[in-house]
Length: 188
Length: 188
Image 1 (cartoon, chains in turn green, cyan):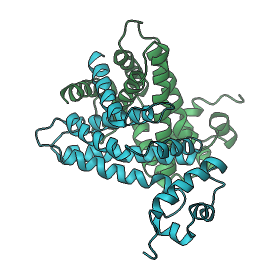
Image 2: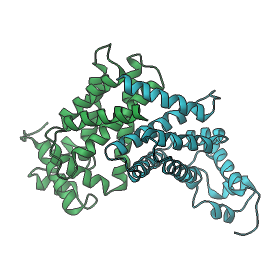
Image 3: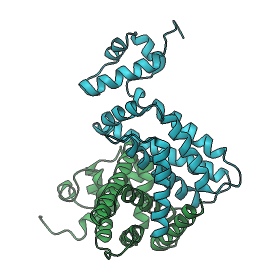
Image 4: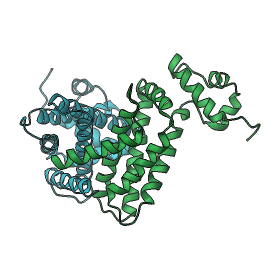
C-alpha cells in the first residue's frame, strides 16, 4: 500500500456507482472513477481489479459471512435454523448500504453480462451453503434443498429491502420472508 | 418447410450432443452436426437458430408446460400445490429424455457461457411462475418465495435424476424432493 487515503475504497465505490448511473456502466472508465473520487488510477487498482469488481466485491464478502455463520451454528440447530443465522449475518452486513445496493441493482439489471454474473454469485452462494450443511452432517438432497430455500429467502428479502420507498431494515424483511416461506411450504 | 425428413429435429439434436461430447462444444460446427445426422445445413437452420439453440430449445418448452400447469390448477389449490402440478408436468416431459439430459448437462457444466445461460433460463422460469401465482391472486412476497421454492425442487430433483446410476423416474424424485423441502422448512 502506498500513501494513506482515508476510505479510498469507499470513495471509489461511491464515485463508480454515481458514474454508472449517470453515464451508463459501459461508458464509464476507471480514469473517470478515480478522478471523481479525487484519487489516482493507481489507487483504484490497489483496491479493485477492474470496474466490474466494484459491483461484486461485496458478493464474496457476503458469501464468507453467510457461510461462516451457518458453519458456526450450534450443532443441534436444524438446517433452516442454521441458515437463518447466516441470513441475519447477511442482513447486518447490508444494514447501512441500502443506497449503494439500490444504485448497484439499477446498474446490474440494465446489463445482461452483469446480470449473469449476479446469478452466478447466487448459485455459488447456494452451492457453498449446501456444502456447509453437508459438513454439518445434513444428507443430500436435504442440504441442497435447504440451501436453495435459504437463498430464496435472501433474494426475496433483498428485493423487498431495495424497493422504492421501503424503509424497514433488512433483518425485519428477512424474518418476515422466512415466516412466509414456512407458511407457503407447509400450506401447500 | 421443404422436403420431409423423418424426425430431422431429433436426429440433429442427437448428432449435436454426440459431437459436443466428442470434440467439445466450441470445436463443433453446424456443418459437422448436419453431416453426422445425414442432413443438410439448410435443414439444421430450419430447426435451430444456431448450435447453442440445440441445448436450450427444451428450456422454453419446459417453461411453457410448467407455467400452463400452474395456471390451470384448481382455483382452490394452495400455491405449493399448484406448483406441484407444474413440477409433475415437467417430470412427464422429461420422462424419456434422460440420456439426452445427461449429455447436455456434461456439455453445459463445461462451458461458462452455457452455464450462465442455464442460470438465466432458471431465473426466467422462477419469474414466470411468480407472475402466474400473482395472477392467481397470491400476494407478494408469497408468490416469489413459492416460485423460488418450486424451482429449487425442480433443480434438486433434476440433478438427482441425471446422476450416474440413478434409474428412478423424475416424477418419483420430484415427489421425494417436495416432501424433503416440506420437512426441512417446517423442521427449521
